Length: 269
Image 1 (cartoon, helix red, strand yellow):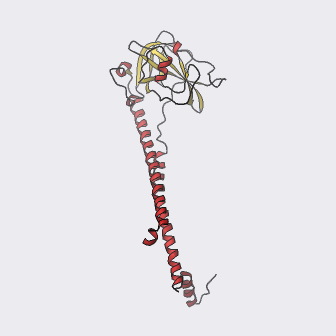
Image 2: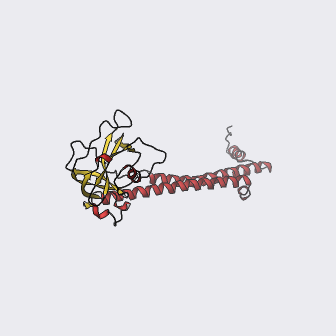
Image 3: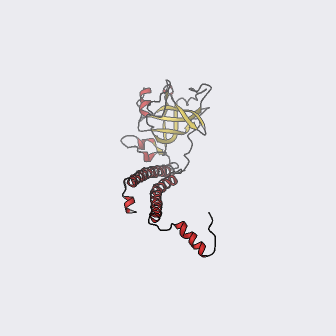
């Protein structure tokens, strides 16, 4: 078997098994990392979503906003800059696609982007039928902190719209100097407007199938080596049977027929 194992053909098969195991292991580690990210996101929701409402000033400079503060409830007072309202396209909700409405809220300390909620796509695919306007004058807004979303390269949007909640891109569309570290997802506003968008849904605490997928990939990595050694063993046994015939020794089938004849049974063919 050692001679067979050292042949160029079986060394090539071994290399293939090693490459397959490496790729499967990397995919398993990737799924494991995805699972860790999902668990971290779930922990953040459980820790922050129902926390006591804080004043917005706690997260403004010189304080530092981090993603650990995501979902923290905050309250702030100011006035909406209605003329700088922007739509974010292709936002899913309960199996439907619609728009998020972003409006700057000018407070005494800073201008904050508020995601007032979701509205469905209208009769035209690139516009809603009606955009609910925010209340005029002073307003008290309660919402949850959210970090800005990344820029979606290669994806455009009509004038007055964005493909994602990209706060740096929002900065270019507004005359106000907005805070770019985070935005606020609206929960309530006082006074409330007559027509309001649907609020952001509470995240579902589900880590997904990443853990089972990770174990499957690790098992696949082991199965590659198992298949390699099983095929090697089968070829070795086949060669051993051929060598027995070449040396004039009876094969396994012939030995079995001889035993049956000794017992008075007729071998079947």
